Length: 53
Image (cartoon, rainbow, N blue to C red; front, top):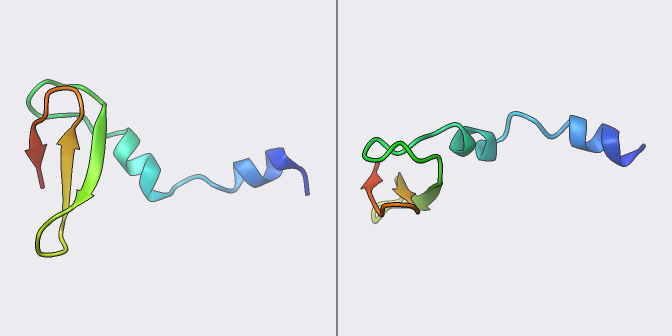
């Protein structure tokens, strides 16, 4: 199996979801996914520092 076929099978993961998010405060696509205090998922904009869940 070639490296190109491996890369082609890797689509649709959670990283793709984060890549398409944008910050509701500034519109930046520089968003990190973090775990919340109770195990939930939250997001933080690395451009402006805004956080949301």
